[in-house]
Image: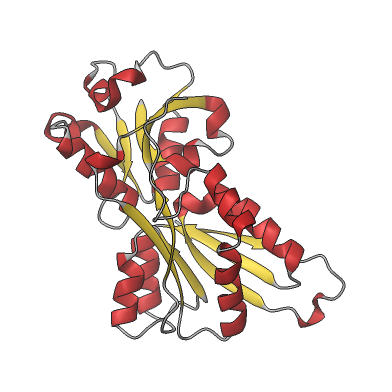
Length: 258
């Protein structure tokens, strides 16, 4: 389920401010709290950000949902919208490459140095992943498990979240023993204080190339384009890097354990 956050403008000059409605992949939840606050420092306009699965947003936009900008966790969704004539031409921007991790609560005794093989441990009864039917991080999780010939051995233990945020909630709450999550969530509060993780080698799953686009039906075209340009600013890129996002042209760094 998508949740909405309004980055409200406090300036007395906001009487003529516009509202930009943004559909954002759930892995952006923590990163966009900072990004949104930084944008508000430069603008009297307001961001209304909803988080959820990219596949669900794709379907909603195809059916006329009134979003202005779409930040997808998979470049294929903006490409499909472009093919359907539903986005402003030339606005697809590949803003990040994502990574997946194995995350466990701080009190877990699982040895994450074993990588995905740790999921074969008899103490692991439930493994949380995002639903691969509409969540790119779920597809990446399945691909990595299949790459290591583990998926068939653990698929009976898999529980699926609607999106990557709900998947994180499953393992945080104790309803799963381990989860395959977005690095960006593992680096954000409160997960970084409450658990530990290891990055799954990026060569075990297809690249998670994330892209944004401006929806053709927007009534705030200039503001939407300005927000995309803001995402390209060095300070914004640096904020995204804090949450594990790298530009798709950047060489991914090796696996890391925390």
